[in-house]
Length: 245
Image (cartoon, rainbow, N blue to C red; front, side):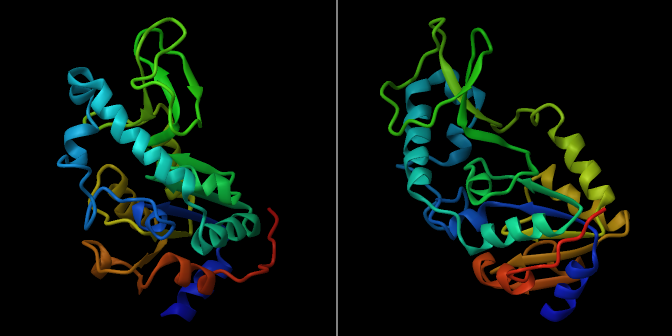
């Protein structure tokens, strides 16, 4: 199946990619789910909510500050780098990610749709001002805006809407894609998981890359078992032929 998937990707002029925590985990970024998913005695679902922030902003920020420090130490892996090569080879390409760590951009990806926001952005809950802050560790917890209001991470918390325009852009990308490559995601978090049946309904071939079987595996055109850092370089040549539209 690897050769068939490689052929589908090579022949497609429009490709969309959906990535999840698995590709970042290979770079050492802790995942929400699975072994090691707990921080202290807390589950992410107890911290990544507006209610938790209102109740104890310092605790929430201690968790995010810890995550930011771990992410700052991580480096893009061979899977991230393969997706950069794929982007450069296709006239129509979109990378839709559920990750907030910025590793895709650090690898060189440019056409990135961030469904769940960006951990390196901070937004004031009082005046709404948003800015990048890549300091690790942060000098003050919780951090504050120049107006005096509390700053929060620029990510999507449980129960919140996706960033304006992100979902619409993701849907459009999937509708136009001839191939959807699904990498390192459990396919259980909605609405992102809904992009997979949407791609199928629009006639795209769907290729999954994941070390383990997922809820979607049996219904896809091709499901490849293994880490993204191994499978993606095998799917995407080191020097692909650049197509122009």
